Image 1: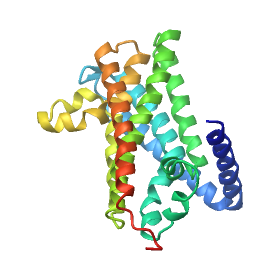
Image 2 (image 1 turned 180 degrees about the vertical axis):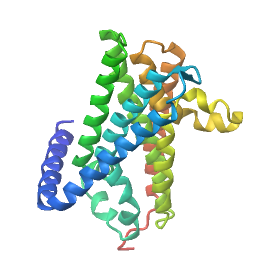
Image 3 (image 1 turned 90 degrees about the vertical axis):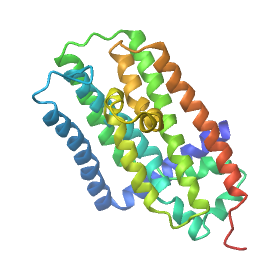
Image 4 (image 1 turned 60 degrees about the vertical axis):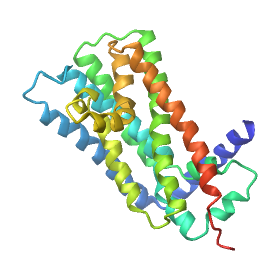
Length: 262
């Protein structure tokens, strides 16, 4: 564990140094990150402008859901997005070879090699809006609710990562399947809406989307103290099951990887 912490600390320093070397790109990415965060918040404000409640959620709770989505997706973009975006190139150009020969878990390396620091601003935007909503709407939260919220948010992040990793692992067989990243961005966007909204869909579609719909909805319900034990168990169960599946699927896929030297 200490080895991985030291390695990740080194990666943090290297990525930060690279960030300072390209300051124009840094500024552009900040504007892009904040703009997407503002767009998601403003759009839901407009959509819910004339409604006091939707799908069993009060308007203030839906706004809070969007704010928490901005925090979670910001963390996801900071830690994982760039790594998933370059995954097909690692396979297609044989760059994965250099990672596989290192005495470090290969899934760790392909998942954490790049850090997108500019997404911190989207996290801060979402966090600031969350605090504003809690204050403006006088939402009472307890210490236990906050602890449960933070824990479930981390578990939700694990679930989102696992779903992404399972899908991008397919590029081991189909290196030019770059569209899968754009598809997964669309799938990730589904997490910002209440789970109850998807119950209007056909049952088989809802069952397929269920893990995704729990990612942000569950920790938000924990914060406003309306979470059921069954929902918490489902999120935890899906997260650990799919993370385990992503590990197994990755190791299985590597058996079929053809290195650049082959």
